[in-house]
Image 1 (cartoon, rainbow, N blue to C red):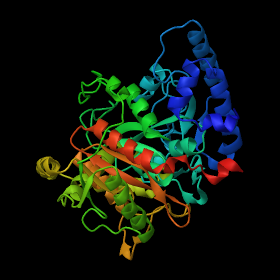
Image 2 (tube, helix red, strand yellow):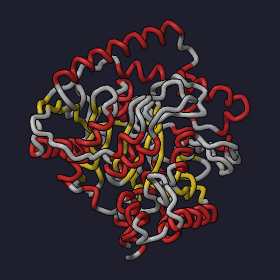
Image 3 (tube, helix red, strand yellow):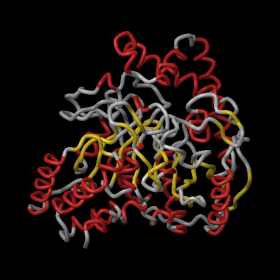
Length: 473
């Protein structure tokens, strides 16, 4: 098998080859390092490469297989970590000049779990500064282009991981999702990205242990691979006060199921959000796919009018807490949009947050009632197709002005405010051959259910089989 073909097998297929001893972990890691050497100079997805330690870990993994030792679910698979996650002994910059030389002495919990499951780290992936915005660029490493069109953005903030996956440099990527940072780059790069339920994938170390708007999770090229990564990353941990008790092994159960009679609420624009015509066309085309699966597809959407206020308040509050202490010494090194968001948090009062949380509680109960009528909600991931890499964010959509750098992400971040699990799965391409994803939202904590519907959709459509043009050059 050629290296390129090996790199584009699913993580599940690669794992089966290693476990059956048809290939070694060393072979697999070397193939991916070769892919990185070939494509990363153009794509700039992996910003800190740990090739030497990866090969040493691969050799150790092969010894374990030779000795017939019990190994983890990701044994021998190449992974990489978003440069927002701490990695022990490996530079972690958060995409900011303020941390360009920072080397932590501990792993973040998602990194720790991927390693414990046998994943072999190839390094760190690019992210916008402090993960702010869905356009992956920063002053240290520069921009990461979309592998389907190098003049377009890959999205973000987990953009480097998305591009590394899409181009066959790694098999599984980790990331975080506050306003769409696992879903938007997945949509822009023809991948699968899940925003898990709050606490499903625990976070540590974390100064805001009870914060519920941002969650860690995985991306991969297939739904089955995302489930495999969820098996490794999920489960309780007493270092996170909001971690869920259900074990990660639940995600190893079969994804295939019948959807005959399943009721789907189908929303083309989530209550009137502007959506580019090319994106809307792809989204509308998915209706027939869900119907072919046996679903009853009904045009409907929940009333989530308070979601914008709730999300923006809690985002600004969190950004202020994290960024304001840095401004005295590093203001000149931090991008304007991050400073703006931090300063938006300064005047927020306790009563404002309390009222926002009360509204969020009302929203939860409204969604609970909505999901008594429907099994899933389906809508666009992103309101736009991948835009110019030279543009920080879209200034308008269909003539509607975007007032902030995240306004164009409302179809993603309004869902974040709900707390429900959501997944992006490839849904097709624009006339310019740019990827578009569909977003599936499930009932409270029904992570496995959205994986099952995404899997059925993926098997029916096979859009994920298409590789970026740069990979065949």
